[in-house]
Every structure is written in C-alpha cells, then in structure tokens.
Image 1 (cartoon, rainbow, N blue to C red):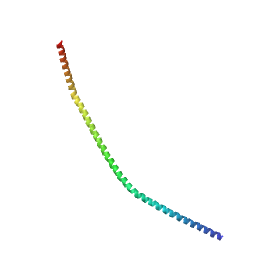
Image 2 (cartoon, rainbow, N blue to C red):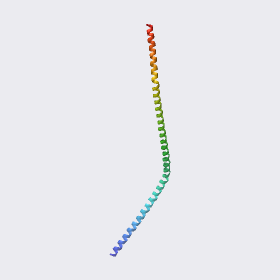
Image 3 (cartoon, rainbow, N blue to C red):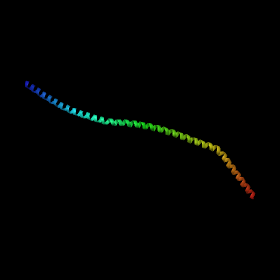
Image 4 (cartoon, one colour):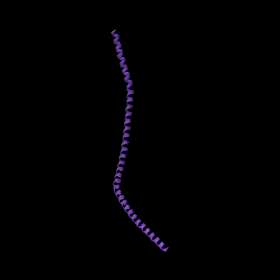
Length: 128
C-alpha cells in the first residue's frame, strides 16, 4: 500500500511539475503578447498625437470660420434691413409726390383739354 501511495505521490508531483512548466510557457507567451501590445500602443500614441494636434487646430479654425460667418450673416441682415428701409422710403416718397402732383396735373390737363375743345368749337362755329 505504501508503494501505491508513493507511486501516486510521484505521479501527482510529475503532473504538478508539468503543469508548472506549462504555466511558465504560457506566462512567457503572455509576456511577449503584452510587450507587443505595449509597442503597438506606443506606436499608436506617437502617431495619434500629431493627428490630435491637427484636429485641435482644425477645430479652432472651424470655430473661427463659423464665428466669422455668423458676423457676416448679421452684417447681411443689417444691410437687407437698410435696403428694405430705403425701398420703403422710396415708395413713400413716390406716393407723396404722386398725391401732391397728380391732382394739379390732372386739373391742368383737364383745363388745357377744355381750352383746346373750346378753341376748336369756336373755330368750328366761326367756319360755319
């Protein structure tokens, strides 16, 4: 019985030794993978920093451009408002001029037409 127990202990120790050797191999491979991953992360970081700097510059420029566009739109709106006010003033001036001049001109035209009609009638009567 003692021999079977010793044999079982030897087999258990051999299995445990094999498991330890396997774990050492796995840990070495894991270390290689982590080292490779670390290199990749460093490379990505070194390449990403200039891209991020460019994106920051681009973002700043885009913000500046949109602010400038907002200013230009406000200026255009003010200009359109001024043009609208000028057009309203011109229309108002036209209406006032028309109100003041139209009546006397129509009266003068009517008077001149009546004078011509009277003169024509006079000449028509004188010829008869």
